[in-house]
Image (cartoon, rainbow, N blue to C red; front, side):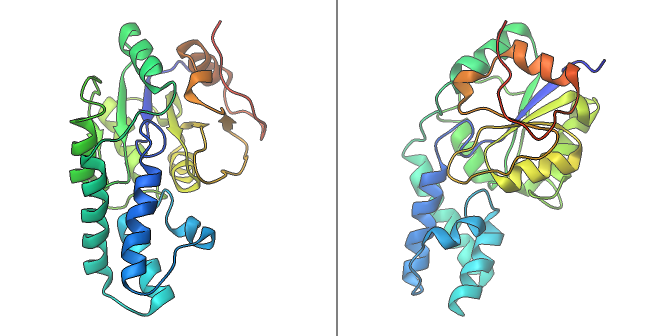
Length: 230
C-alpha cells in the first residue's frame, strides 16, 4: 500500500486566483497587436507557459516576435500580481492542515520565477513550502512531466506517492505524465476526466485524510468526487 509522501501544488488558479489576471494581461497584449481575445483562445492561454501563449498570439496575428511578446506578457502579468493575488477558497485551511501534520508540500508552477517569487512573497508569504519550482527551473515546463518529476526527486520519493493538485488541462497532463496521483480542482477551463484523476469542486472539499486515502487506494477510474475528511 502506497502512503502519501508529499503534496505538490500548482499555483495559478489552484492556490491563488491569478488565472483572471493572466487572462487580462494576455488580452491587453493581444489587443495591442490587433487581436481580440475570446473563449476560442482559452486552450492556448489558460494554464499555458508564457512562451506558448506568446507563440499563439504570433500565429493568430502574424505580428510580433515571440520572445518580445513573452517579455511583454510577463511584465503585464507581473504588474497585476504585484497588486495582490487573493487565495482560492479552502487553500489556506488545507495548507495549514498539511503544515500542522508535518506533511511535506511544495509549489510547482508554470509561471516564470519572477511571478512565483512575487506571489510567494505576497499572498503565500506565510506558507512554509519545502521549495518552489518555476518554469525557469526545468528544461521543459507543463504539460511536460519535467516539473513534477523534478519535485518528486527533490523530495526523494516515488512520483506515485505524491499528490499533484492542479486546475488546468496542461497541469493535469504534466502530473499524469510524471506518474503522480492527480487531484483536479478546475478553475477557468474544464479538465477532462481520465483514469487516475479525481476531481473536487473546491479546495474546501479536500482534506489531508482524503488525500492519504486516495494515494493508498491507488489510481481511480475515470470518475469524479473529492477526497474527504473522516
